[in-house]
Image 1 (cartoon, rainbow, N blue to C red):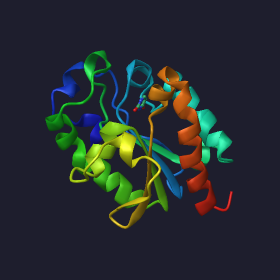
Image 2: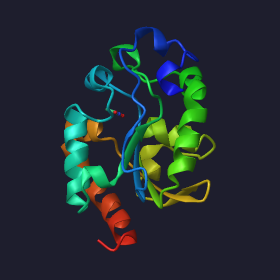
Image 3: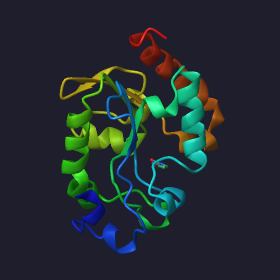
Image 4: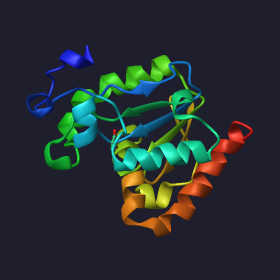
Length: 174
Ligand code: URA
């Protein structure tokens, strides 16, 4: 369904849809923003520079990338890597909602402001004030943290993210 989607304008400029990948029985999910140029080319999430860092973060948590599930708020690349517009995230909402429902993970790690706002439109405060605080989305535990692309620009924030990831590791006894 997603591969043929034409619900918003992003379908006009995408090369590939990027549905998500990983173990469909995963207990741990990472939820990002949307595909960039590399992801659009390959049809896979988090395969560029931010993706390399995400893979290292997953490994530091004592998981393999193939053991978790990785998906994004929007399934098509916003041109020029701009943030997705609200009507685009809304057009994609049913896909992400169903994807989370089908996977039904124990924990979702939310990567950055866009997916945070998407899952928690009514929460006061942004990712800077809310990161590191456990939240709940439809009965699933959620840990909001910074996006790996932000960490590439702001390495000082890595210590905060590591704290957040350790909270998640504790849930899995790692
Ligand atoms: N950034 C994201 O949020 N998602 C990707 O898939 C790649 C980069």
